[in-house]
Length: 460
Ligand SMILES: Cc1ncc(COP(=O)(O)O)c(C=O)c1O
Image 1 (cartoon, helix red, strand yellow):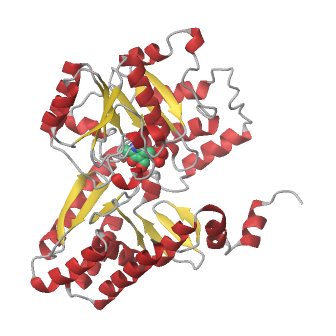
Image 2 (cartoon, helix red, strand yellow; image 1 turned 30 degrees about the horizontal axis):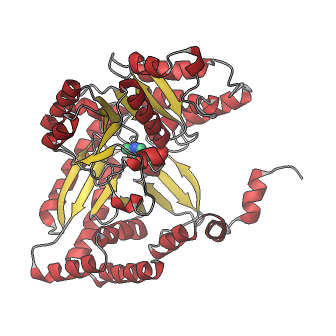
Image 3 (cartoon, rainbow, N blue to C red; image 1 turned 60 degrees about the vertical axis):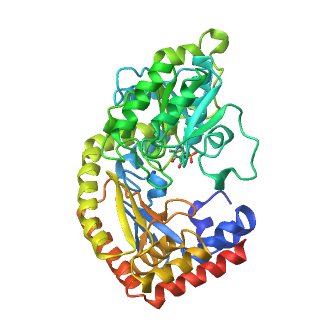
């Protein structure tokens, strides 16, 4: 019998959690079960997921920001079918194919004129690896500065620039020459830059872990200080890029002109992994400086034809459906619709973000009655309250969201950029309902908290 995908999936349906537990990662399955996220999804379209019982879920996680154009987009599907049917010769290696050139051209057309070259990778982390290597090589300097709370991926280069202890613990030692500076503190940055040995300052224009933002003046000083001390500005736009924040690149909000940009996530359209490191011609020429060095930074699957097709089709959809502007408009409407809930509920401290990258910050309520419950939860596990929001949003309202990081009471929303006012309204009504319950001190919500604490104790 030959390979039959549909037959295989039908035959083994229902074994997913068992197999995942046995063969991949049992702890993830335990997490999913303890928070009640253990669904069997069978189909996905646009902003929605569907499970084996026919239930529908509004996906405001979008694969960590991958599905900006929505899932199963017909243009992307057709492009990939066309590419496969054309029997395109991929990964010849000793070749310079057309599609990488076209995707590089399309990306560069969306950047400022100081950008001239692209290196394609297979993930966000790999794009960051390339940026770090190119920056060190081009400047002949050893050090890299990164921000507290930063997230740039989990391979050793990006992990050495990770500003969260939870990811680093036990994996050291890290690459030498990496130092952390507080996000938003230009004076601290200056103290490090003035040593004159810093190759790159890498930052996220809006930090993914916590949806942390800094004022425009900070970014203006970053740009000026890096220019003064000869340090390259590396904008990690793996999450914020390609329209997520209502501009093509989030650094545009702050009038920045980075030397290197990293991108990935949305570029893949969710089908074929792809990432890119975009830089000036000078930086690229410094690394690829002779024929001997033509492959000095490379990877077997870079430039793979299906990834290039996915990138080209995705960029075309972003343009044709005006998704960057759409994200800006929907994002503004979203923040506006959420603001009254901040006034209404003591737990709900603030809403922040740009475009469709939104953070909901929860914190200690004022009234004694609610404060004691909140403190009890926080003592059991810091950041637990936000899980009590994410849980019922999913269970009761079928909305998939995530907490924005370990030990923080921030829920992050990354809806697909195609989401409409109807979906914003649905979410706001659902959040209102969940917060209303928490506010009324509903045992339902706090019982769920106790279940989670128990589960996490068993996990550790
Ligand atoms: C800003 C940023 N950089 C890099 C990465 C790493 O990307 P990947 O998970 O594709 O390696 C991420 C992933 O979330 C990210 O948000």
